[in-house]
Length: 20
Image (tube, rainbow, N blue to C red):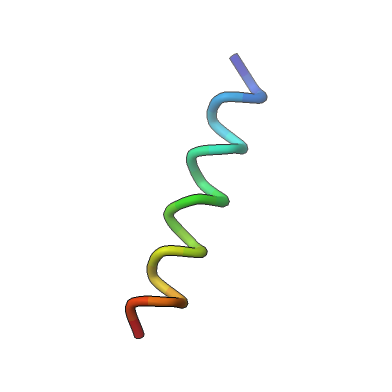
């Protein structure tokens, strides 16, 4: 479960950084 949350958080952060 922790892995999924970490992966999702990382993906969101990366998407926001790229979207910026």
